[in-house]
Length: 147
Image 1 (cartoon, rainbow, N blue to C red):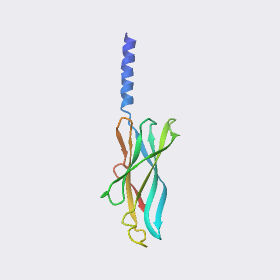
Image 2 (spheres, one colour):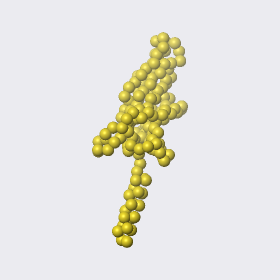
Image 3 (cartoon, rainbow, N blue to C red):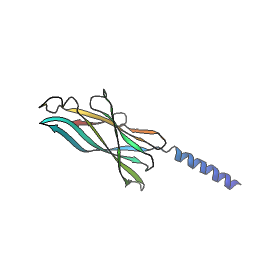
């Protein structure tokens, strides 16, 4: 009877630990930049941002919230799963990509050159249970300066 009770208590403790395990998300950085022009007029810049999620699990949806004008206008982009990769501690991580972009104060007039601006963003993952987890660079948000 004692062994059965100990097994039940340990099982409940382990199940509780697994239930509160949170997803981790981290920014790997901007992997590519694409500039769009028409008739020598700069129109927009698109960034390919790579990031990782741990642990590998069903039901993840990811993406970024971003702005090109100091959060006056907020945009959202969905992430795309790329592949599962071996993690540094022997497990598996998910590799994701999201495409974000901006025009800043540019692209309105024929012949207008690029006026430098910044794209600020934060990454998120939503797990299968509907919980949201964020990577916002410890409250500072990530920033890419378009020059």
